[in-house]
Image (tube, rainbow, N blue to C red; front, side, top):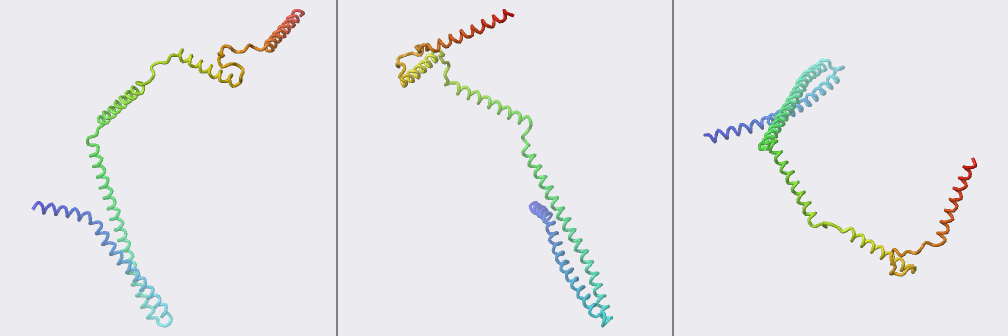
Length: 224
């Protein structure tokens, strides 16, 4: 008994869902029939109009009878056109209502889904998760820093570095002098050649010229 009742309720639900489609199909079938009738009435009107034009000069009664039939067909055509407009309006209304209902049902389902998703989700839960992530990131950074610095060089002897650099300089100078043939390979950087005499004499001459110019300037000031 209960199973039959549940089946009946389920069938009723299914019928309620199919009702709009069934109504639209029925209305469209009736609309198709009315469109055919409209076309037939229009053809009848045209036929009676041509008949009245044919007898307008030769047979007055026949012409008037054709006009009366034309008026009747015209009246029926107007009624049919009005019915067509009514059916089209009803079809549009049912389709719109059905779309609205389906849209509302979809929104209800979406709301239920969102509610289910957020059932165990609160602001405090999110904050706890984010705090835990930040802590784990910080631990990861500390581990990476420890790993990177663990195998590094603790300190560098600057004096040893300077000595090694001086040796490299001396080797480069020895190689350069060896290629030019001016100084033996064993010579050191400190044993550089003396300044040429011409350079010394030129420097002394410049200094004497400066002294002469200063002396003449002083004499001129005293004469004033």
